[in-house]
Amino acid sequence: MLLRGSGTAGLWGWLTLLLVACEARASEITFELPDNAKQCFYEEIVQGTKCTLEFQVITGGHYDVDCRLEGPDGAVLYKEMKKQYDSFTFTASRNGTYKFCFSNEFSTFTHKTVYFDFQVGEDPPLFPSENRATALTQMESACVSIHEALKSVIDYQTHFRLREAQGRSRAEDLNTRVAYWSIGEAIILLVVSIGQVFLLKSFFSDKRTTTTRVGS
Image 1 (cartoon, rainbow, N blue to C red):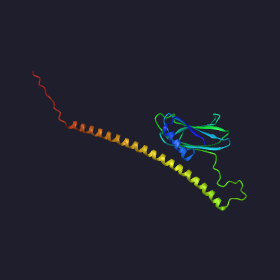
Image 2 (cartoon, rainbow, N blue to C red):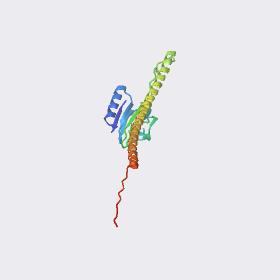
Image 3 (cartoon, rainbow, N blue to C red):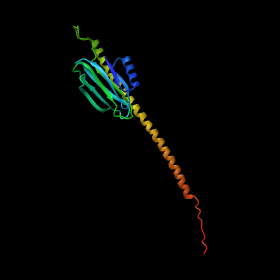
Image 4 (cartoon, rainbow, N blue to C red):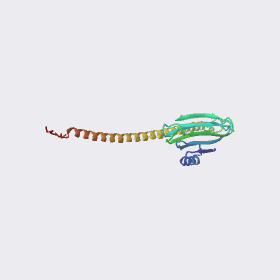
């Protein structure tokens, strides 16, 4: 699998890309996308291969990003603007390098954290049917069922982790806003209290009047 990144996503995104790619050897990556930035990835795909691109914005702003997928000839296969999450499945029409990009160029000051999973092809069967004269045994069928169930569990765990990270980010952002709002209310209350003290003091202060006699 060939997966390369290009763009202006910064050093953090490159390090994350390299670590995940070296550790898992898969195209399931989480990276940071700065404001006014664009990050592209490239994948060599053989004609007739079924592929699925799934992405989700975890943190940042309104949790949206632009996504674009192009074929080897530059034809646009998928294009969405300001999407929070989406999934797109296609079959490669020709051999070559396919490019998909995530853009945060519409944002002026908000960083985004983006997760994507790019699956190329299908997993090979546990028990290939080639050179088999008999059907699967009961044990083999049970293994296949367990394998499919575990794949579903992994997918559910990934989605729940993403939702948990997104929820934590929203909660921290809300907590920050509440803290600033509380500080602002405290300052306003203090100013109003001082103003009321001076206002009441002016009501009860002695006002001395001077009388000037004018001689006839």
